[in-house]
Length: 155
Image 1 (cartoon, rainbow, N blue to C red):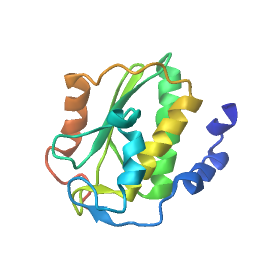
Image 2: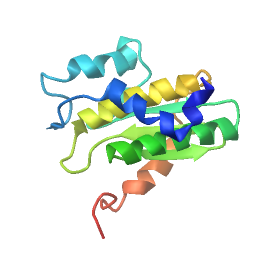
Image 3: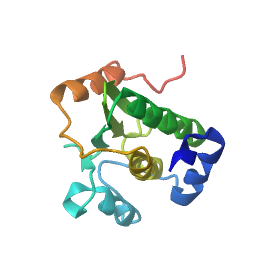
């Protein structure tokens, strides 16, 4: 759907996937959110995995070329601005690795789940190819973003 590249049309995605609670969940989830999370997980037919500590969702996206990948990342970044939330992510040519987590307070939030859902929809619209497992290098690049622990602290 080529109209998704028009920034003025992107905010409509937020309304389709916005969850009413802004509650943060330590580690896995409270009883309110598993129904929203489960369809995203590989174990339930989705493409996302929980990190070993249960505090983040992560996955890789692969596209035909760098241009498609950059278009996808731009669309996600516009949604990040609207939702006032950012991922830990890295990109190498046609692959983007994204990890959604909330740093303060630590754990998963409805924003993380909503934006992961949104990423799936955007990826489909931008022609995502069958994803490859996230490489250690891609995860390491994303880990560098938060290694000092203050990526979300105003300076």
